[in-house]
Image (cartoon, rainbow, N blue to C red; front, side):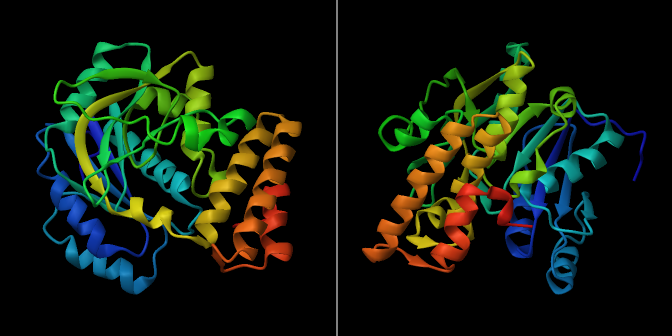
Length: 302
């Protein structure tokens, strides 16, 4: 590794126990039509067997694989990779999920050009497809009680695709795939690691906007996100809890205590209804684990 080598873009892939997926996306990334892109795989303390398999599958790849000593979640994994990326003095940081497949090898260049065009923009994200070919919604609002209450009616499908690429200002871009100015990422200290997984992108967007920056959505096809269908399962599992727990945590961090308690109450009632009408199965005890996680977010998790 040459610490003096500079790269315009550093791509960070956070890996956890999915070596096959990870090796596949790295192969795709190496084919991107973008010069000066260094790939950093940040392993979130996978099991030794999975980590060693990743090393074996990555033999011959000119990439950096770094291993963390603890799994503190997605945001922490990106931060770990971004700290390593400093040796390359990148202008941009590109973040992409492991469980994805690139379908347009020009998309990163389109995102970079958009960032260069709008100097007040810190972060841009592309069009992402679900495995069935439909567009995954990656445009989100900042969390408020009203936005959470009306999400399905107003915000569930804002993302679009158009042959004539459009670029629009948005509040939040989903963390599955985005490009950010490295200086802006470092200036706001990256992701808040209290979230572990989900809502960390809303928190990052809030910090960027507070610093005077904006975010944009670029309607260029980029990847298929295989994990998009996982979030649609009707089960009260850790994903279900974290997506809701973290919205409450976001509001508490902004000192919006009344809104946080209203949201926690709303999630509690809806979860009880889903469980007892047998619409959802549950991996956790509702009274001992799930409901307390909504009212006291730090009671659940790492």
